[in-house]
Length: 232
Image (cartoon, rainbow, N blue to C red):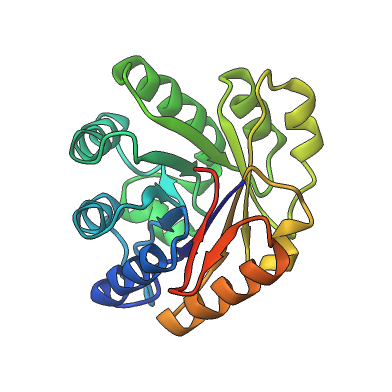
């Protein structure tokens, strides 16, 4: 199981980078940042943030999430393929629909078409990007997203409190991989995920998560210099 940290992006960009550096120093596996375009968030360009973080850390990098509905799929491919070249074997991407009608409008889209846009843009994206990294799909409401992930042998990402479509996905996927976003470690561990990302807001919270991880998972090697290692 990979364990990492994520931020929705409600911090200043330099604070997001500081979180990633703290996570790297603590020995976590993954750092993820969400894409948002409305206050109080400052992560409208996660590819740029992750490129900077790639140069400062050795972490695996991910999004939590990339908005596949309001972004042009060709632009997604261009940005993240560039990041993939800069940080080889360290990138994967989580796709999500978004849930704010105002933000859809800013990009000339309508929220009621979020689901068909997701499917249409995904199909376009995979036709453009053949040497792509691993993809995940964020699934909070729609069983169709679980079906899409299973059909393409991608991973499924859920919030710890919204897991109703996990069984559907696991029943269909040839190689199911479950990712979980959680507010605390215990909440996420109970679901037995392949990747667990815990929300943090400061380096101090990263330190606490490290301590909790070493207590809950003694099989992960925790060293006196505050380093925890798992299978990446």
